[in-house]
Image (cartoon, rainbow, N blue to C red; front, side, top):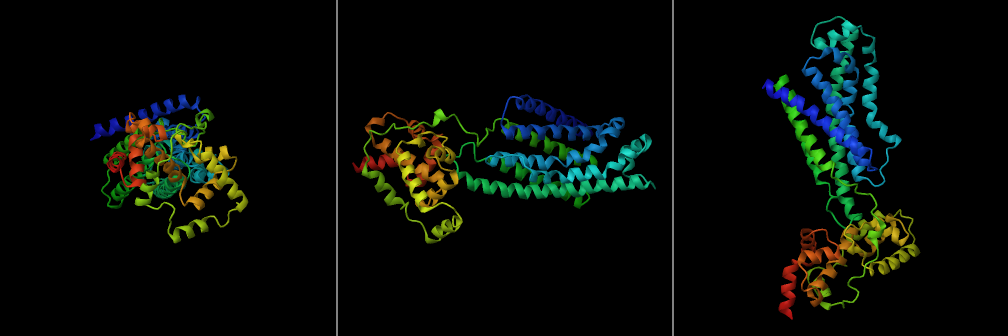
Length: 418
């Protein structure tokens, strides 16, 4: 047990250090804000686990100088990770004055621990080498013990609970919002963030259960914590280093107007399929009321709305949705309006979010291609990529949702009719 504890304590420090170096290397070469915040997060993780390792090896001569910073560093752990989630899921994220509120606990503890600096060398050594449990009448040391307990057993646990709740709330809002921003979900749904939130929640329950029933001993507790943090670091590194900046604008050359199918005639069967499966223009009254309520404070006038509708219809004839990573911001830029107005127009006029609105165009064109001799040699994946889907699976899923059939079933059904 002691050997496992020792190995894990060392591994988590080296792992964090290596990840910090890797992120630091890329930090100098990137303008990706989430990447920079993650690099800062890994740096403070390295400091925190380094302080913990010093305790494990009883390197008290070093701890005398690092103790003052150890608890404030620990209190930065969850706030920085939360800011990382915000930077991934928030458009035009910038660190603002209000974000300093997340660092208030660390700053307060830093201030409350200030008397530690006035202890003598011998008193500091006695304090960090076992003074937590030793009997003393030194009022300053008794005070410092209280501050330490407040931070370790109070604030850190409270932070964990608060940031789990905030992260769940933020992730839910983001999950709903991505369909108003993106025409695709690959690499933007951030499901791995959900995994980390569940991981943190599970860890919180396990550690606090151990504390509550007083079944904790130092070694098992450290093993549980260090093993958990090893797993956490691997997950956040593996996904974080490959996670693109979701809201970064692509090369404008990629968003040129496309008209690959302009010579293909409309086939009536396309409209028949939608009519049979679902009337996409009919929406429940309560949904209409919800949309109306959502935009009742909007400054968009009817004249502006009609202009956007007319311009949007013309723009969509150029088939910009063939660009697989199309976003509402890019369409808004092309129409010389803002994304909020465009989203409102699509919601009110078509009773759809941007994701659904764009994918219906893609499905319409894919049905034409499936029934056209011009594309009979195309594979399903080829058709999917042509009309703007990133993968065959997303194509099949969307096609089934909007028509009630898979592409293969649809093609067989129409071939049988003819």
